[in-house]
Amino acid sequence: MLIVLSVLLYVLVAYLFLLSIRLVLGWFAPDALGKVWDFMTAATDPFLNVFRRIRALRGAVIDFSPLAAIVALVVAISFLNRLTSYGRITLGFALASLLGAAWWGTSCLLLFLLIAGVLRTIPLGFRGVSASPLWKVVDMIIQPVVSWVMRLFRLGPRTGYTQHLLLTVGLLLVAFILGQYLIWGTGPYQGLVRLLESIPV
Image (cartoon, rainbow, N blue to C red):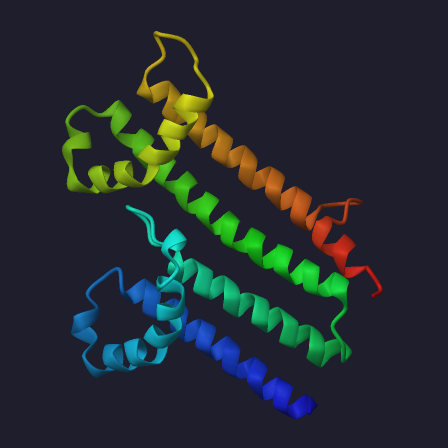
């Protein structure tokens, strides 16, 4: 039984690696890969399509279904890893795995938005640069978050887009650091994941 679980664990890790490579290559020129790309899509599309059917994951600008697919694989790998290491899965570990995977997905999104926000501040110092197609794509990514921050924090009539963009970047950074501390902990504070793992049942 342990051998079967170990083989399944390695298969899932290999599949996670394949899925990650496929998603990264999809941003560039995948057609140039020919049959290699055909193999990758044939192997990963059925799994991705399960998450693509969930409408809540498909936003107007960003499609979160690939991230959800990766999080699902990470949760499955965590469960199998625990099962092969300790021979059983406790309720605490199940909750810790779900929380860890959920935070992993959230932290990736926060980091992605943080990078987009920092990139969006670059054209502020250079006139004419913001007309570039690259900056328009970056603006489409970060604009919904900036709009939400503008509705949440009314800084006054003289406050413009630049101040709200900088505030958004600051809030994203604080959320990322605070989340990392609360979920994983540091120093004497163990974090919520470790506390949940210590539940004996």
